[in-house]
Amino acid sequence: MGLFVIDIGGTNLRYSELVNSKKPKINKIKIESKKNFYEILISLSKTCKEPIENLVISAAGPKLGNLIRMTNQNLLIDPQSLKKKLRLKNCFLLNDLEAAGYYLKKNTLANKKIIKKGKKINSNKVLIIPGTGLGLSLILGNEKVISSEIGNSKILVSDLISTNNNFESSNFSKIEDLISGPGITHIYKSIYKREISSTEIIKNALHKDSKALNVIEIFLEMLAKFLAEIALIYLPGNGIFLSGSFMRSLEIFIDQKKFTENFLKQVNYPHKQVLESVEINLICEENLPIYGCIEYFNSTRKDLN
Image (cartoon, rainbow, N blue to C red; front, side, top):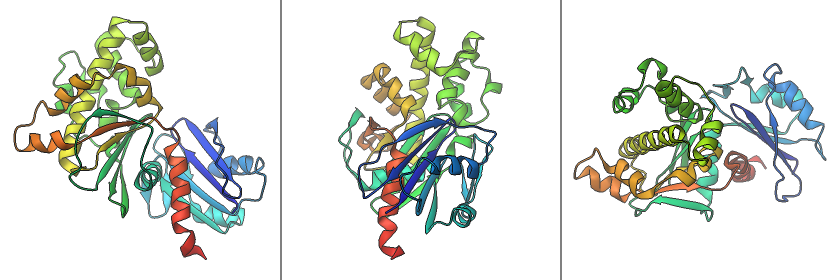
């Protein structure tokens, strides 16, 4: 088959070579910002057992036409140029949330944690990944995956920070300044006037540090309220799915009862009934965009022959 798949995010690049449809072995490297994407690909291709024939790339950034200029990296990805330079049969480019959505569209997840119970009222799902930034995709039944750039919108920012008088509003210009890994850092700095990484905040919280625990509690309250608004916008009657290593690291701090209360807090009937029906899940599986790239390629193979 000669399939090579890449997921390039704000911090790391993951890749896998598939030979004879075997289960993929996924590798991870740090992104070297000084290299262009073609140089990175050439370097990775030297690790392959077979020549690359088919390439599927997922990348964090808006897809305009058939190009992605990445949001958190100075990289422009052009699949047609790569196809020509590398002499590929096929080269496909997906937004990272679009790729992850293809996996969620095709698979029933066994490895997930239910944060809030609900019931199915339609076939639509919403996938949200807070990480270096904030991404969202809408999965319309088994038909279509639509990605968005909601993280760079200003939606709900003023509403969410108005609930905490300790916040300096100038630190938060877009929603991913709150709902993301860096968002926890921004919240901590805004309250305690000191900047530490989200990794350190979570580590401190595991050691019962009161400041870190307070920041995580504030973040989870904001996340619940954000998800409530998303649920009203998209009506995901088959569930909201949270994913990514950052969210998995917060699992231990999620109080399901309190999270549900915050999710339902500001809405009255009949819209409260809508929110009560929405199930919220935390996906415990890793590397969704990589598996989504594989699903996408398999779904298009019959059209390539």
